[in-house]
Structures are given as structure tokens and as C-alpha cells.
Image (cartoon, rainbow, N blue to C red; front, side, top):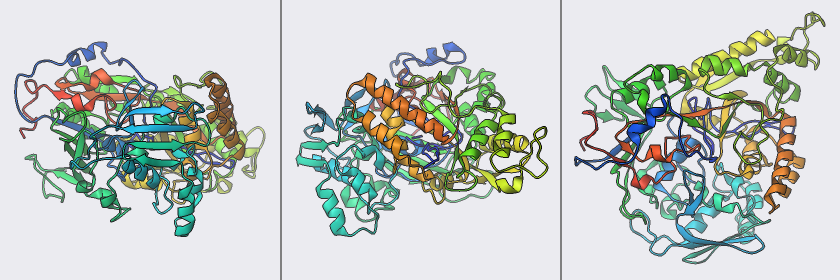
Length: 626
């Protein structure tokens, strides 16, 4: 999953080189992953106590879950979205063929049964009887066929997750076609595509190699059944109108507003107000879906509000204006710990994510592997974690994080922090200044050229970007710039190699607990890596062999070989493993019992959201009355 941004950015993309440049997923810090947790560590540990077992309701009224986020989604389209802040909203309004729970286990979804052929080459999904869209119309296997065709359709531009389907027969060939390909060529490719609705209740998917792990992929947004009637009217902008999201999840969109201004009286408008106001960067509101197959959820409404200033979001949580603070940054942890009013609501628990200093390998100087090595050596990982993150996170130079099957956390990764070695790497590889000597090596800044770190604008991101650029400038004796762009614009820029920043901080959050998700889905030629120009054909061959290996122990060894090859390319300066930092009010029932390392969006987002509840007898005066 790429990305949420902030200092948070999910399903981010990371860069590689050689044939290089890779895909992480959104930006200045934390995504999450399905290596799961069964409990949370809090400060203090007793923080879980107020959230334990649900209590009897002692009041009646509207139940609203208000979630404070940072960066407003760039796009909310199941077949084109990839960042955490995009997917977390889609997960509420849609449900895939299958689902993944908070423990990383595959569960039933739109399909109540599924079968894998003996040779592992075909998976058949049986759509549950009576399945409906939000408007009550029938949902059939043909709707999921439409979604999976749209996910690889060359005419649908801006797709981010097409690589997740590369094991499906014909998917790679369709992904290789350009939007201007003739309709006859596209039709011929679709005739060979391995997705077919046998009848209204049966969907069959055929693979190029045994793919038992495809149950995880069947839970991903690419399978979400968008409504063809709405989508066909405007493939690009259909999602902006909440009425067009006729999904099958526990909730349905009511408001999708990119701008929101909250007045001192608490009223909202989508235009700026004059006077004392606090302006967020948007709002998304979902209401219960009465036609959800499990029954209408307990919550009446879920509200996401977005503000890039994490200090403001913390204050709103403290004042009882938010129920979950999902944009807490590491630098605020000491503030939270010292605040007796909210410290018991603070949750800190493992996140299976990797953050990296990402490079666009098609742009100088990062088209030179030696430069990538030097910047990896120059990056002060320990100093950054201590000074900017207050110790929240762990330095890490490999790609697959600890806890994920196939990780090699004890093995060397990309070149680690070593300032002197960084200078020598440049000096010894064509970037030496005219007065450079063995005793006093110097970098010629003109040869290195202009280098900028681009980041999504927010106070926390600015502090972190300035720390990194100051660190790099001091090591090389060259000015490294910091360039701020609006958060949604940053997300958009990272999705295309032509606009992806020269250098940025990005991260990846696992979609499902399998090394295939960390390697094949993202680093294969034409996958997320295309954003950075990365393609290593030898690496692809190793990954294809790993994907086709049914024996997991043997497959793991191949995936580890693939990661080693990736490390040699120095795709980016792998940086650190973050932690999930969340705040949940004690009257919110359910999320704290379903924490997962996947929680890159909000605490408990992969639990049974349809059963989450609010103890209205304990809500503050600031809680909505309607």
C-alpha cells in the first residue's frame, strides 16, 4: 500500500537504480503492514485499560467516529488509488472478494467460498447469495470481473496497483499497452485475460504460475466493485461525487470535500470565512450502508477531517473535537506523555513499514549509483531518529522489515551512515574538487549539481526536511535545498516518473504478509518501480521463480536472494522502521481491541468496523448531537 503523507505517507514508493528506481509509498513517515500485533505498547502501559471490554450504553443519540488526519487524498478510486489516506476511506465504502483482518488473516468478503485448483493455477470465488450495492441493486461476479478488467485496462490512466495482478494470465501484456493502442489490440489482449465471470455467482481467475497467496490480493482495492454506470461517464473524475460510489462496504460516502473551513461556532463551509477560523484541508464523511451483507453498522457516521498541522490536530483531540488522532507525529510524543489529560489515550505499537530517502533515478545526479551510495552513507540515521523522532523508530538499511517472512534484518543493507566514506565515494568517482587531496578530500558542488529534497508542506515535515538537508549539506560541503509543496500535490507528483521529485522521503506499508508483496508487487519491471525508472531483468527472473515456488521455505530463499540483488542496486537510502502512533478516546469501543501493524491510517482500521461503537454516556460536551 502506498501511501499516506505527513510524516506519514501507505501503500509509499521508494526508488531504485541500475535499471533503477523504486516504489515506496507516501512520504515523510509512517505506513503500515500486515505483520500483525495482538497487543499494543502504550505509555504508560495502563493506557489500554480505559478501552477494554465494551460497556452497556447509558445514553441514546447519533454515534459518530471523528478521525483527525493530515493529508487529504489525491484520488479515491479503487483501481487507481495506492496511498494510505486514499485506501483507508475506500476500505469503508467497498469490500473486496475477500478481506484481511487485524491479525493479517484472510477472511470472507463478497465471496463466502473460494477454491484453489490442485495445480495452483486457478482460483474460483463464489459470490455470496443476495449480495447488494448500497442502493440495493444486486451485485454479481460480473461486477468483480469489471473491476479487475478496469484495473489493467490501458485506457484507464493513472493506475497505481496494476503490478499486483501480474500473476494473472494476460495482465502483464495489458499493462504493457499504451492508452493510444487500438481497440482491436486491446480487445485481443482482453480475450486472453485470465479473469472471467462464469455466471452471476462464480468468478474464475487463472494464473501464469501457482499463486496460492492470491487470496491476499483478492482482498485488495483493485477488486472493489465500482459501479460501471457512474465510472463510464467519466473515468477520471467520477469518484469526486459521493453519489457515484455505489459500493458494498459497511458505509457509503456522503461528503467528499477537498476544502473545509471550521468557524468559531463549529459550523462548516467549503469556502473561506473571514475572521478567526481554523482551516483544514478537507473533509470526507461516510454514513452507514443499510444494505451491507453483515447488516447496517453500529456507527451512524464516520468523519475524516484533514489538517497538515499535527499540533492543531492534537489540540482538537485534547478538546474533545476528535475521537481518533491518526496524525500524531513522533516529535509530539514527549508532549503527549507529559499531558495527564490525554496520555492514557496514547497508543504506540509496531508498524511493519520501511522509510527511505528516495531518489528519482532518471534525474541527475541520482542516475549515478555512486551518488546514491554516497547519499546513503551521508544520511545520519541515528541522529535523525533521536533528534527528529525522539527515539521513535529504528535505523534500518534493508528493505523487508523485521517480523515479515523472509526478512534479513541481521544482514548488511545499503551503505550505512559514514560521513567520511560518503565524501570519499564522491571524490573517488568523478566529483572531486580541483583542490581535493587525499588528506583533505573535497566535493566539487558544481559537478554534483543542484540537489533538492521535496516534501509535503507541514510544520513537522519542514523541520524534518531541514534536518536532513542540513545533515547532507554539512557532509558534502554543498548546499542541499528543501522544497515544500502542498500535500495533495506531493502525492500526485510521486505517481509519475516525469514528475517524481529528485529526492524525497517516502515509505512502504505492506498490503499482505508475504514477501511477494514487498518484492514482486513493487520492484518488478513495470510495477511501482516505474515511477523511478527502475527495472532489473535479472531480479525479475529471480522473483518469477520465487513466486512460482510452492514450497515456502524454498521460496523464501529466492526472495532473500532477490532482496540482496535489490540492495546492491542501492535503490534508495533505506532509512528506518517507524512505529504506529495513535490516540483513541476512551469512549470509542472496538479499535483498541483490533490494533494491527497495518494501521497506517487509523487505529483498528482492519478490525470489524461494522461493530465499532461509541459509549454515549461518556462523550464530552463537544461531541456531535446529530
